[in-house]
Length: 432
Image (tube, rainbow, N blue to C red; front, side):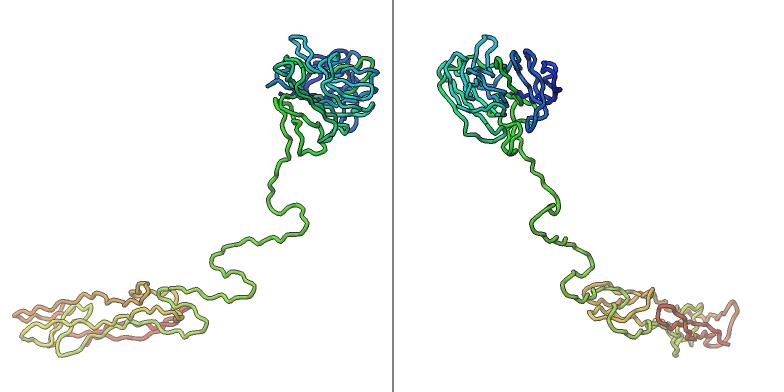
């Protein structure tokens, strides 16, 4: 439980009432007697405080504590000191009309705690206050289960927002009755003026300064709640370099992983060529190499001999002479392309867009280019009767029959980016 009131939400010169004592002031009072007045204040007490004269009172009622003790805090300034000790603050049990504790001030500025003005002083601090000066007064009252095991504590801070004070006193085993506190009030001093500010009560522990000089040790809650909370500094984690530091720190470069580029170093390093495995073309090298001619496929002429040979793509098979058995037609000799070589050194630059015949498969070792399958022309079947030779639908004479001859003519073809090649063309002529 925590109740507090700063009096800062009122209007200077107007009365403090039950209706206007809440809101931005804090916790509203349940009772106000007389005409306690909002007045302007300076320093840490600004902008407003409450001034009380005879018979002014501000009071909280229906207090419910977690245990049997209550902590109080009030900032007080006495315009003048009374001619005789009198109380200005009270704690009560309303249901039984029982006085639990009183805070008093004497003509020499002594602050004391009594159960009632007619009861003995439980503890006191001599010459604690001076007329016309703000002081912070805190107290603790523990209501005993018997009349002999109560306890009281008293602190006076002549520097109002100080964290510590030497003006403190306590007493145990004292009689403050056995009735649990449910009322707390700042009351008038008959015939004297007092000004009060930042009034608070709690059952959770010592309340502390309202505007401490060391914020790290503040226990005053920032807002009304059931329990006083420590106001701590929030730790902030920032990104990047700090905004201010004693020495300039270097900004470390970000490590970049790049693909296909040499790493940057303090000295210039040569960029080595990457090994490229290319089918049908040589890798690029540092020196100019001669451009070699492309492989050529020659058209094999018909073999001439004593026996008839088949003419490729011919229509008729002419027999040289009749023999006792049919002879096999021998195939043409076929030249195959050599195996492609894969070596570590730079190879020659091959012409672009070349259509290769049977490229070797890429592997760690060079693979031979296999021979192509050739379909052979089957042997001629010999019969017992000579058949006439016909050429283009008419009968011909002669033992050998007509022959077709083949000739090859070398022609040059123009190239743009590729090196020149030699191409061959075949023309068929008819023998007269």
